[in-house]
Length: 534
Picture 1 (cartoon, one colour):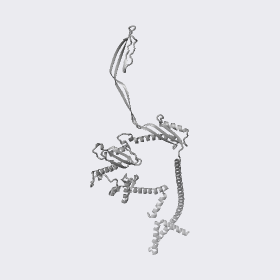
Picture 2 (picture 1 turned 30 degrees about the vertical axis):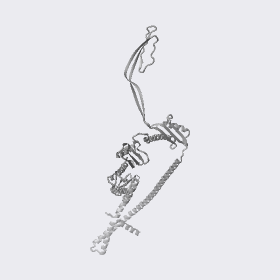
Picture 3 (picture 1 turned 180 degrees about the vertical axis):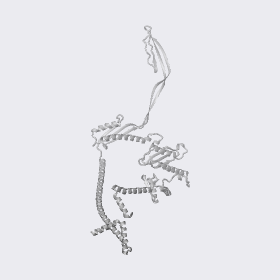
Picture 4 (picture 1 turned 90 degrees about the vertical axis):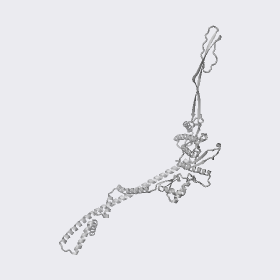
């Protein structure tokens, strides 16, 4: 069996020709996919894992730390708008030591860590001030760990000690917070911050803690011990805005479904009564009977008997009709009963919750190009019914028809149309590119197919020629082998061989060996001989 390179290549070529196009694609694409996957896996496994070195940093702190990391030639990444610095996990400990050696991060000069250091010439007042500053710094660090808080600043005011109780003042504190974008602290979180300060500072009460955000909104109004009106202003505004917004949305959605979006504008103004009322009513009823007194009285006269004018409360009379004895004499008898009851009073209290609407005002502006004058009355009636307008309460509704400024809408429409046109052009370009690529691929495939057909036809012709040539070569080889056998018989008869005969024998053996090892070459030589003879 011959394992030469040419035979191996021929075998591979024959194997490749026997495969279908799908099999050829799989053989080519599959190794590529495996190689890409292996490369991606190796790349992903070799990538360093980044972890947070510091978070919730200020702009100055982040700039100082990144400058130091660049100088130390450590890789890093920034997240959360530059407030969080990420470094490779394997280098965290080393980077922290390097930054600590450089004095970073520099959050504050004062902390609890250096309070135990005694300074020469330091007074008790200086030490107290350092304690307050260190406490402020620690509270800032603690508050910054809360969810939604990016920045915190704490100011504590400790009053000076006084021997007189009337001159003694309470401790106060102020906290400034910067919350994350789209984050709002609820009342429980604000109360938690206030309690944190109250339990951290001696003599500090939660009502003496003021918490504000960087937008100037006071968040700690509800913490006040008293319930004065000015402390509830913020809550009142929130409730009022919620009521007005709910009314506006309901009316606006109704009008948009009828006239279309952008044709009407609704505004509502609600006056809400935030006073909590308690209504007390009393109902008197007769209770249990305490005493009863009955009195009888008889009167005799000559005139017609009459009744006694007027009776008291809880007294009823049982009159006795007179009995006439004679023509001129008459008599009457009166019985009085007095009953005393124990007084019984029922007291009822009704608490009216705050938040009742005292007055509601609604304004509706309609586009003159979309709404007619005849439709204004219908709009007013529908809106009044939907919102519960009460004219006796003083509510007011106003519907006006005005021309809207549509320049902005037209600009938006033009921009949208331009964007749609560009998208259409991109789509058409992609379709054209796809068609062009498909045509190119089709032309290439057709040319390859035609070339392949010509190659197959040429190969078939060559095979036919080779078959005829091989038959002739076999005949020649058979004749040659027959002649060689006869020569061998003749040489066998001879006892002594000449040098010429020996050389001829060697040549014959080499030719025979070469023919066995290279039949294709022998056939080619024979074909060449035949061509020369022709």
